[in-house]
Length: 408
Image 1 (cartoon, rainbow, N blue to C red):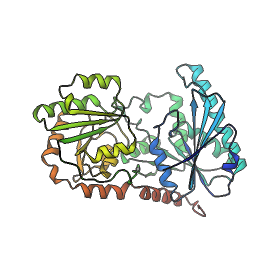
Image 2: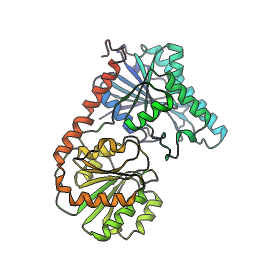
Image 3: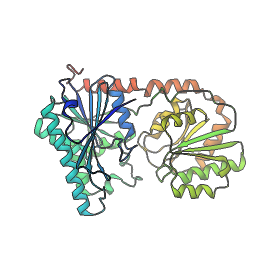
Image 4: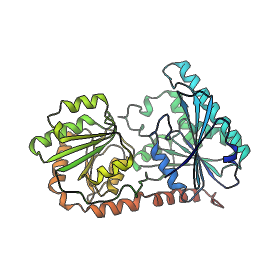
């Protein structure tokens, strides 16, 4: 998706002034120059929804290098405007004063923008919050002042006890705010059934709609693999969540009995992971790409035999369904919603932290690889996770709200 990008020091009224009905997305996470990959899956949801609806996305974040108090970055394409509001701050919230200063500037920036937006443009038909904090508090303010209802999509895996930012490890104030946001929302969505069930029980939510993550099927598609060693591919940030050590332990044991295997690690390599790899007896069979563009990830997947993810906690990982769209069978741990896209014909699920089970699955994948129909795996995944499919689900969600008249 190509964007026309413009920067403004003042409110961009000439770009916002329009009478077309629209849905306002308030994204707590979203890609920006400060954090380029933060919530990129939410951005892909926005692309999908904008195929059928007029979407205005607003995201607010600090810019540690800013020379102006506020800068508006506006990205434009048909039916979609993305507005990133940068406020001047170093982003240091390690002290109480830092947190207070950050939150003051954050909410001042977004509230000023919303007030000007609603003066220069008709009110949105509804507000859709992506990740409750912090934008859910803005939605509460909008609902109170302008009586506009809001939905919430939760994308976080923090409701799984093994997550470092586990919900019940957060402050009482944070928990209370999230609870109020869910209580005031008239509809809730999630990308996985597993997290949805946790949310329903935790916040007494009557109904949650499942809208899966989306894959760009123009990038991620089946292409026959060239002959060579059996190649496993892993795509992640190689951190604690992804259990990089556990994956390497299993691969080393596999390599000790089968030297016709290799592992491609795609993504940024932290120093701890690099040090772990440098000491590995199988390091000559491991390739590292570093951080690369999505198009390169797609090519790497097309050139592999099997995708493997051994996470400790997840919601519904994009990389799994991207691999499936390339026709790759997948080995995944059963962390969170990771296993929900996997069945007997497209992969193997193993228990989290069970390295012996992962090793057995990798051996089984090699011995039974001929049983996997890669073109069929890719076709089935593309039907489930394409922009068109997920975009229609957003359209249906909004139709169900009863506010469906004259969306376009």
